[in-house]
Amino acid sequence: MITLENISKAYSRQTKVLNNINLSIKAGEMVSIVGQSGAGKTTLVKLLIGEERADSGKVLVGGWDITKISRREVPYLRRQIGVIFQDFKLLPKKTLAENVAFALQVSSTKPAKIKKVVASVLKIVGLSGKENRYPGEVSGGEKQRAAIARALVHQPKILLADEPTGNLDALNAHEIIELLLRINRFGTTVVLVTHNKEIVNRLSRRVITMEDGAIISDQEHGKYLL
Image (cartoon, rainbow, N blue to C red; front, side, top):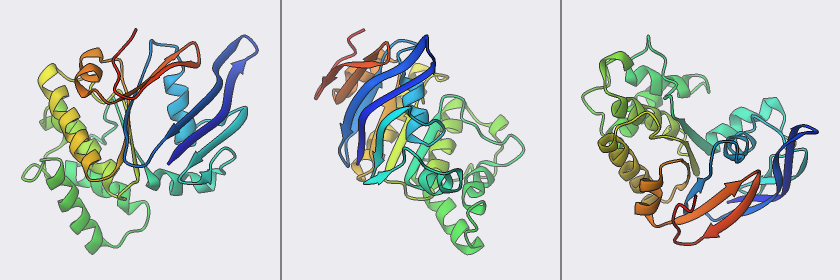
């Protein structure tokens, strides 16, 4: 599903952020990528969604080499990879339903299908009945649920969650992780990038640990080592 072959990335001669990364994630896995700030996790995320390019090596997603992806092809890649972030990235002047619908509108989806898909994904994330509320009217956990719903509209094969619980309290963080687990059980590959030691240890899933731009540990049923 995801393969990185000999990936290196530097922003300057003095700053090498990824150093010969080799990594393979199978379809249907749920994997945590952990490490301290500066370990290279954010750059790895940017490579996977086509926001950055590697200096050397290959990034394969579903058999598709995205190492030299053109800007025109990035939107098609983003439909295969749903992405959620720590800061939700919701449009404040749009309702939750409108935020979710917007991801379909920009890809010229027909209105009837948009209505059906939006209702479906909001139900999956537990926001039925709150679709007409604005981001400022709901909790942080509900904002993240809306962001997850938006990420699911294209039925992506991969869901990339970059610090999805970073702005949440313990209870909401737990609920978001339970939702990600449920999505994973549907067959979606979930890649969780996090600093949250408690969450990683409780999951007892595969844990990839990064340090100074390199993978220093890859445990099948792992713990947060750092």
